[in-house]
Amino acid sequence: MKKLRLILGDQLNLQHSWFQESDNNTIYVLAEMRQETDYVKHHIQKIVGFFLSMRNFYKAIQTQGHQAVYFQITDADNPQNLEKIIASCIEKYKIEKFEYQLPDEYRLDQQLKKISSNLKIESQAFDSKHFYTTRHELSDFFEGKKLLLMQNFYRNMRKKHHILINGSTPIGNQWNFDADNRKKYKGEVPVPSEKNFHTNVSEIIAQIKEAGIITFGNIDAQNFSWPTSREQSLEVLDYFCKNLLIHFGDYEDAMHTDEKFLFHSRLSFAMNSKMLSPKEVLETVITFYHKNEAEISISQVEGFVRQILGWREYIRGIYWKEMPHYAQMNVLKNDNKLPNFFWTGKTKMNCMSHAINQSLNEAYAHHIQRLMVIGNFTLLTQIHPDEVDAWYLGVYIDAIEWVEMPNTRGMSQYADGGIIATKPYVSSGSYINKMSNNCSKCHYNVKEKFGEKACPFNALYWNFLDEKKEYFKGNQRMAMMLNLLNKINPEEMYKIKIKANTIIEDMDSY
Ligand code: FAD
Ligand code: SF4
Image (tube, rainbow, N blue to C red; front, side, top):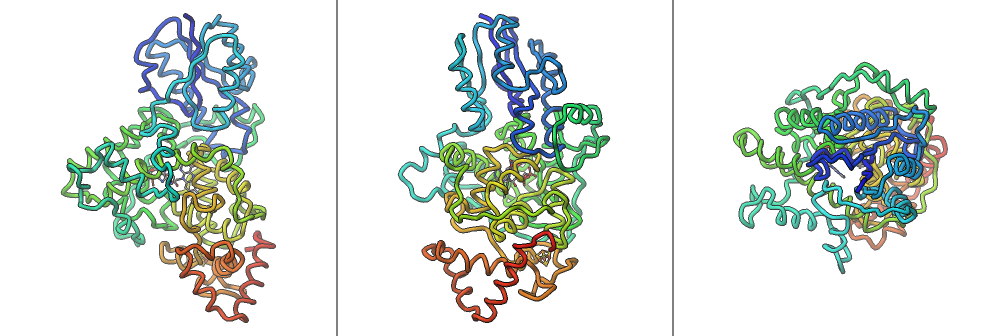
């Protein structure tokens, strides 16, 4: 029977059982499509990264002896959408069965279900064999529970998959070393420079321009740094083990104006495109740790395992549990617009300037920059979560909706009413000052609440608590913050609110 097998841009999994045997009756199809480049405005590096990785994957499966067809974005016969591409391949190659791997994004899942049901030939969906969990495993795990605590899910995953565990005891006698993962980085140990592949991507950029795709952000055409093949992805993993793991946990929450990546792995793109599986990443890291236990402490490794086995799988489970209504949630009724500096990087706030410019230059910011600087600012200024989501989905090379949306709308913007975070991740300037060196070089004074030079985060923070206090009054985890709010005298509060509203009305001047 002649089969057509679809490979989406984030399904570049050479380890999938589909590729174990080649067969002359099976044709694989990969396509660069306007339907994918245009559903949100993307960073140029994100489009380049996906297109190049898809092209390399196409070459790799051909080398293995598989039959494959590829549509480049500028090909005259590229119909630019999934339905037409599938239909044209079925007709051209006289296909009798259509097969696809389950997409991770709700939008594509719906589209492929619809396309399949309209086909006149048989169709079948297969597991992508990427994640530790199935789509609905988290829903089953939390069935009947009010609180969907990541910690409980993570502990269960550790036990179920026998990861960092001796019998029933966690290695290091603790399930979680979170408290050891909060050091400020003061240059005590040098940060190795990031693994950069210096790929020349000028040709692909020219094609993106020729196709008329609107992008944003910056790119160095001669020095594209991200991995775009399985071999390169494995190199990034190896580099992480040998150079970064040793301090990963210590500086997980730190920020520094001279260090864009600190000890972060930069593996999210390789994993989200499925060039690497989370299982092989964890197995490699844990094996490396066991061989080097004299140098590497358990807190570094547990911190890393928690991100992938815990957070990554948890976020995916929440997405499938809560979609599609999750995409509309806005419990705090935030309604403001993103300021223009999110696209230009022009702001006097040093922390925001570093985090935004880095995002525009690298298509990357690490977790704490995403959560406690940029996300903190958008929540304090009460920006509509649709606007925040669209920016995060466009700007980061690793942004695919299943992982971007619960992190942004949920964890960072509290728009889901606490499904993910038990309290909003908001802070005044003092947290940013504690975890980074941004404030010492800032135009603003982190100690002041109002006045010309006051740190904008301060007034915005107290104003946010004041405006949302009714919503949060029953939340025990907010009790301390709301108590402190109540102690602010009315005269001071008046000045704070004037200051906060002036900032919100003209964010681009700050
Ligand atoms: P490391 O710090 O080295 O961590 C290792 C790996 O752990 C990451 O590669 C990632 O796969 C996983 N991980 C860590 N935290 C999370 C998390 N919260 N959710 C899921 N996986 C996690 N991650 C994405 O992959 N895509 C996104 O679009 C995305 N959007 C985010 C938006 C916001 C507002 C926030 C707060 C976080 C977001 N994250 C997202 C999670 C996290 O910031 C990135 O995974 C991480 O910064 C990627 O860099 P890294 O590979 O160097 O990570
Ligand atoms: Fe950011 Fe305020 Fe510190 Fe400036 S003073 S870097 S605006 S937290």
